[in-house]
Length: 471
Image 1 (tube, rainbow, N blue to C red):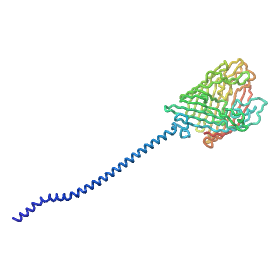
Image 2: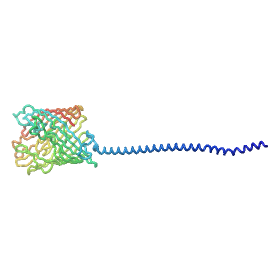
Image 3: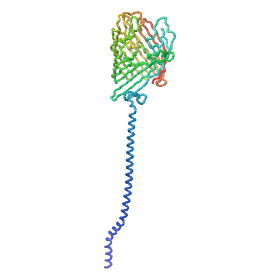
Image 4: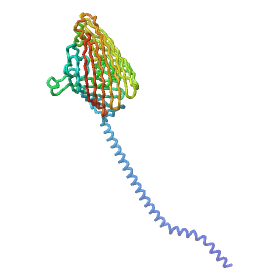
């Protein structure tokens, strides 16, 4: 009994001791835990402080980068603002930026032309063409001497010159509103005169700059000196001579106002009347008495096959108190026969067409013995075949002619009138070799004949060579 009691007492006290032991254990452990917690917090605080420092450093670096980027953008904007305006869309000239400092914003300035050396040997049947005249420099049918029997042209004669060298300047602008502006000036060294002391072939061969074209374009309008709207420049053959088919082609540059819309173009151009004297056949000085401008209209269509155009001309002629009117028409174009061949042509006819055709081979009008003014009828044309033998060698064969209807029934028709030009014609053939792009070396043979009303005639034979570099 006693033993069982003691055993039970011991067993009943064990649970009571366990809470006390746990409390003592916690009490003993608490200082260590508190100490450990304090160290951990300090470590965390140190890490947090370190992270805060790193974040602050990153923020400072980002702010510096943003400031640098802003400064760089400002500098780039300043550089862009200082740069010339960009070139307009389309085919660009050689320079990268516009260089016309005095032009409108966005203006593109361009420069071009060619250097051309011509050397020719001429043989005329009925006398010699005067030295220094235009007929010695290129084919001008009105300068072919016609003297009749007993007159010999003598030996052939040679001329060498570079007067047809040319240069042009152009300033082109497209406004923000899409308007197109163009200023164009073109010059060469033929026809401008020369210094009487040094401008000759004795020593310096100095020749003056000569105005060819000078005009401004605004969208569809052109104002200034340019090719006449009655002339189809695109139909001219690939000649070594300045023109080649001079007899039957229209060839006029003059001041005008022109409007172009689609296939149509119209112009009012500088009027001028050339006058021949029926009694003597001599050409009177040009009349500046005109009041109305020469009026032209043209219709043009083109495609891969070439182009075709028709032009009309209306004119008033005036000399003192006498007036007359005239009208003419021109049909011309270019037809591609394939990759290597094309045909170029022109046909002209009308009353008072003289000044516009063949460099004034015939006069616009004639003055009869009663002082009456009459428009002179004229006809002319040319045809030319161009063939490319290779990418570097090409050739051309050309024929041209002009006829004038001199009215012998006019009062005062006299002996002198029998010497006026009735017709002229010519044929040319050439070969042009281009060893390098833009460089042409060519040779051409030509034969021309001029006939007058009394059936006398004179001819011209010429061999011409050229070297031409375009830029």
